[in-house]
Amino acid sequence: MADKQYPVADLREMTDDQLVTEMDEAYKNLFNLRMRHATRQLEQHQALGRARRRIARIKTIQTERRLGITRG
Image (cartoon, rainbow, N blue to C red; front, top):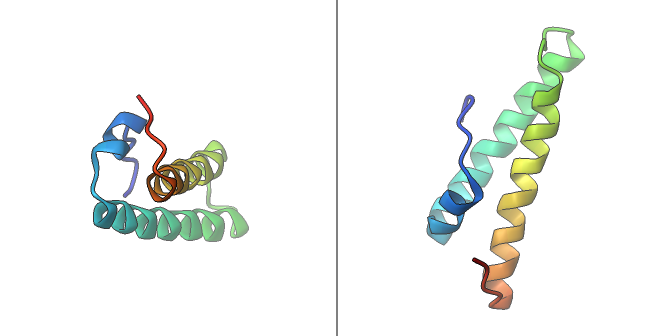
């Protein structure tokens, strides 16, 4: 997932399986960022927040689908 940034609309177009794969990649990325932060190798500290927000967006879309909520 390196520095890929999908707009929310692109995430909404993904299938459920694709979202699960994207979530796995997002968690791996967050773990790597945390390790780099702990060893003081992380230069872009805002990357941690972006990674957490990405996970939250994916979880929100999965919850909306599970509850049958439709969004623009």
